[in-house]
Image (tube, rainbow, N blue to C red; front, top):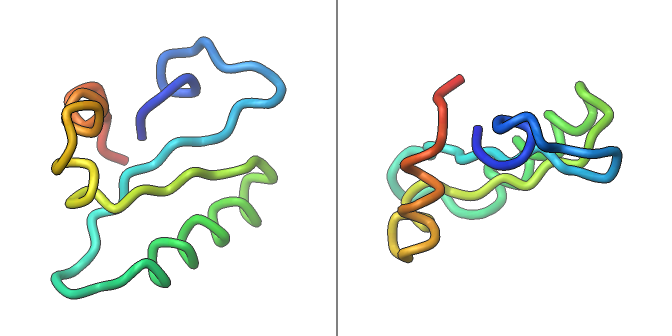
Length: 70
């Protein structure tokens, strides 16, 4: 988890930001399915990003550094 919910500065319209560690070769569909499942369970919008994709950008690496595993 990362982002405003983790930091405690979320608001009514905030989403839940999650990194997903997918198995090698997994595409976007499992990540999207996971995000949909979390949305159904929590009732809040979810932004799920594959961890390996985030590691490829400077912003993603910064967000990974602040993330907390669940």
